[in-house]
Amino acid sequence: MSELAKFTSQLDLINDGNFDDIALELFRYQYKNNLLYQTYARYLGKEPDKVFSVKEIPFLPIRFFKTHAVISGNWNPEILFTSSATTGSVVSRHSVKDAKFYIQNARTIFQRFYGPLERYHFLALLPSYLERSGSSLIYMIDHFIKSDSSGHSGFYLHNQEELLQKVESLKKSDKKTILWGVSFALLDLAEKYEVDLSHCLVFETGGMKGRRKEWIREELYKFLKARFNVPTIHSEYGMTELLSQAYAKADGYFQSPPWMKILVRDINDPFQMINAGKTGGINVIDLANAHSCAFIETEDLGRVVYPDFFEILGRMDNSDIRGCNLLVS
Image (cartoon, rainbow, N blue to C red; front, side, top):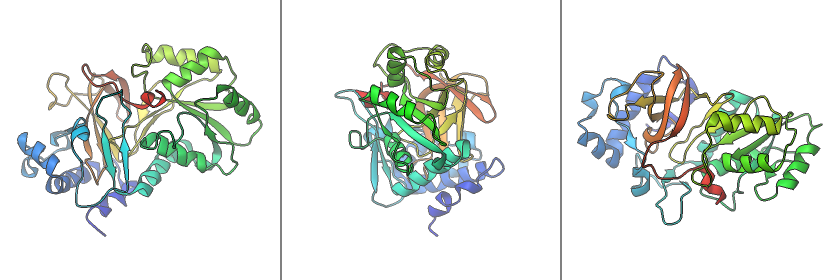
């Protein structure tokens, strides 16, 4: 087993008791084998012999994915995930060594929270894979759709009436239906139609990202719940630069798999971590990112609300407008 494989092949063995030790071991590996990360860490004075806790590990600013190939080791990517972007802007690029590993990890995480994929039909208010082949979200949802052997799952971004007909036809199915869409598209549907989705789970991902005026999350969810007749709105948190996702089953409180941890940094001092309950910049440790960089400083604002839950409260000032909702432009 290669040095990298021992990280990616044993994610399901990670827990609170061994997370920090594995994260520190992966930091040492990536420092040695990722020249970009090593250069950044050395600039901060964060050599491995000076880092003794997870909070001392340097987090690579996410913008480096726009300007550099972020790769640990020596290998050729099997697939390249790219972020959505406005015209003329530079996109993030995440080189992925093993597309099957990404899908296996995404399946495992979803099923930890919601059970087997086979229990669901997936209706996506998202562009199809052929329209947006570089999106990690679309790649994941395309796999989920193809996992439904009934043939009833699919992409419906451009045909709301056909989507509603499909929703109605699945009411008597023995499978649960998931309607999964970017906020912009779900809001469009809800403003145009008041429809009974009480037999569905509604998944929202991303914000408006410049497509229309931002809504406060509580107001958006209240509106969607009323128009769709559902008790709660589920949500997914992921990004091009990560390989793992977090899910919120209610109220926007996300929970990560054991190999993904959220830390919050001080807004004015990005190298200072702050306590739970306080708002700051989101840092992510994603141990599935063994082949690129597992320690990412995002441009999201949020807070840890419980030991295992976190909220995303918006974007930091001067951050680029980017993300899932630009998929529908």
